[in-house]
Image (cartoon, rainbow, N blue to C red; front, side, top):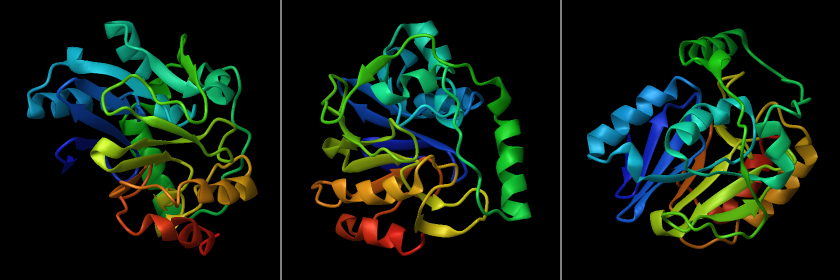
Length: 237
């Protein structure tokens, strides 16, 4: 799904991953579920780019519904997979999330589970090698993605800012579609380790420039005023 000249999404509002396309190559932000491998192949074919154009994957955090095809692509091509150092163990399956699901409604929850099963969520492979990153790092990848630490959902949760694409990828630092209740609009994400911290750190992104799209791991892309994002999420907490 094309969002902009350099920006594409694979997956849907339930689980999504993103591609940043430049003349120098492609950066993938998050890797969805294992079954999104075929979605990746179709999206690359649609834009006429080979798999060899992918230069790296940046993970917003280490949960399994963001690891998806990352290890498969890493082994097939040798590209690096970047994750914040505080989530490296989680991405390798050595540190399991402990957060509770919180509120839920039957219909949306079943839809989330059914989609996860259909897309091979149970087949996700943990990473065996990662490149750790820290807050403020600008990666040597297409689009020059910058890491902004947003701990709370997980210790190593980050946003990834790519000014060239006008994009801020936020993973599960917030959501625009609660996968367990179906509620839409900017709000806290479920399965968050430290909900209070996750709300507090959102001010770190509200002063950013060159943000046309806020792109969560779950929910529709959001193109409201970035200055009001933190307040909008807190209003739904």
